[in-house]
Image 1 (tube, rainbow, N blue to C red):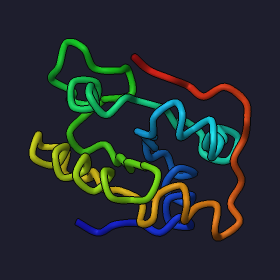
Image 2: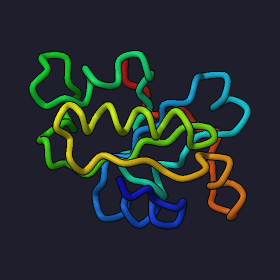
Image 3: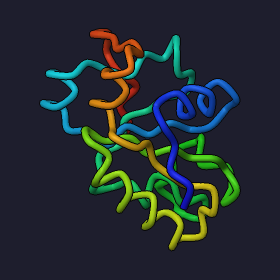
Length: 123
């Protein structure tokens, strides 16, 4: 799996990749939200339901789970759990699933913006 840097994640979001933030509510409250104005289509999905929501064959999928070839970038706090989540998505057949190296901590470290506006949280 080719993991993305924060800058590559930004580019992926701008070209239409689905950016999925799996951080907890408390982590997002401390670090801020990924701004939809910068990452159009960024959504928050709890790690415990990630596979159900992103599997195009699932009756519980989100509308953006349009196909097994959809580009998906999973983001977490530090880039550890997102790697495991992306591997799990790949095991389901989502061949273009990957994650962001270093998580939101790396995003902030290179000066990319966050927001304190409400996120697009999917349950």
